[in-house]
Length: 73
Image (cartoon, rainbow, N blue to C red):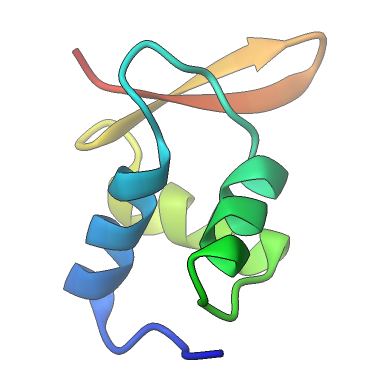
């Protein structure tokens, strides 16, 4: 397992696993990153998206009170 090196690598990694038109949770994103060979925890992914990617790369959509993330169009 490898861990993310820097912010740019994290952004690229997360954008690779989120497909266009898809709404996914942080748990799904972390699971897909683990399949790609990264060490990723759901809480860390959630905080990284909030501080670095929200509104610029991803948008938050609430579905039944749970945050789902989709690519910004």
